[in-house]
Amino acid sequence: MRGAALLAMAALAAVACEGADARKARLAAESRARVDAATAQATAAASRPVSYLWDAAQLTKHLVDAGLAPQRIDTVHALPWMGVPVVAFRLGDATLHAYVFHDSTARKAVAARLDPATLAPAGVTPPWGQPRELVENGNLLGVVIGGTDRQRDRITTALAAGAGPP
Image 1 (tube, helix red, strand yellow):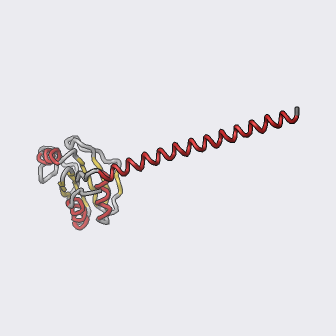
Image 2: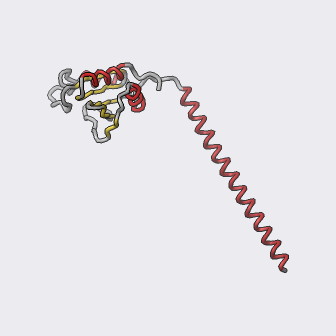
């Protein structure tokens, strides 16, 4: 009887080991499938045509490429008359409030309503300090506030180059 008990225990151990091996194989296959899906998705994204539209990632990339060391500011709220969210950065002593529109037509419509002297709609107290500069490029409308003349020039130059490929 003792031999039968040992044989039963050995059989149970073999089944348990096979269960663990089968589980490892299944997990490895699932992991490989996730990696393959992510690889396919990345390949598809890389092969898409360049849109030349600004987004937060391209904005950050252009600022970094210009050597400006942008620091994202999440406490800035979008102005209601802009109609889109704001992406704000601290760049040394300057601040950039960037509004990324769906397309350049939407950006032009909003920019046309701004007083060139105040960068706000007529009759509205400008929310920005001095000095300030407006940057318009494609679907991007940016307001550079404060900083030195050199800082503002570097920021506007980085954004005037256009979105381009990511």
